[in-house]
Image (cartoon, rainbow, N blue to C red):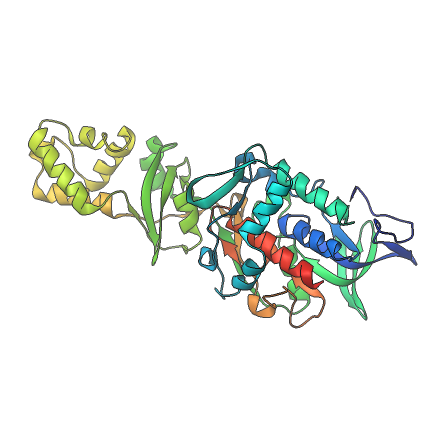
Length: 415
């Protein structure tokens, strides 16, 4: 049941969890944030007979769902395990994922007759559009008697004797349980903010430092000048930061590097660190190069390399290796330099594009503050944190949505 403003009258019934008491709306559960986690939690709590109110500051629910996956929503990943998540406590996600798996969410999708397909690495997408998932969730909420209120700005939150009091510009609520599902700081143009962290701090909850994740890298002016002809060129590579390695596609942009491989490794990279990019196995490449020297010695080095990579990239890599001329004129040193660059090209990004384009936020509510089975805070009974606001960040490929579904479902069973 989607309402544009706060209900101001009426007795509580099966479809109306609100009741008016001295101009204060009372409900069992109040959830802040109508994103993936918030809607899933609302559905489950509502199905269990709880009165549920879901508050959202935007004009529509599920805005991040709408823009995800190029408009087709990569709603989960069939290969989802705890190893696909980053957290100060790597074991924290296990309970929620076990309670509600990617197979469980897929079953819900299929019950709503949403057509889907699998891309590489277990990524599941809608055949049509992301709004299919949003419509599914809002339909489930309506059936569960959830009240969704949009365009709601929260003024203050306080602890009361029997729960919490939430004051908004549209009215005041008393609730027994309060669920914070308002996400992280990524994509601020959609209204993302640090509000969820502020709520945690207000109640003495520890916050793990937040930073952008799944975000493109930027180059400094010198690197940009050298790489300008490469903007728009994609390539397969293996990229490494510290001990973490991903092998996927990468893309040169007018600001630096993007593409799945770079977005993945950005979650593990720290400012000032070096990225190592491997285009090809060194031994294999050296064998190919020596064979080409024997068979096509008169061919220009970059022309031969362009049979493997786009011409602009081939020229760029030759420049990085400081090699030029014909294959047949290459010295052993030149062969070693070129094969070394293609095996271990080292880049020092200037930084990242930040929260503006980051798909998710690393860090957040310290998982040591939460019960992993229910998402309830240990210090404040009745206060829950779910989804992106928690210090759990998934890889690219549907994992962050699965964390939203799993954490939302787990909290919904406990409310």
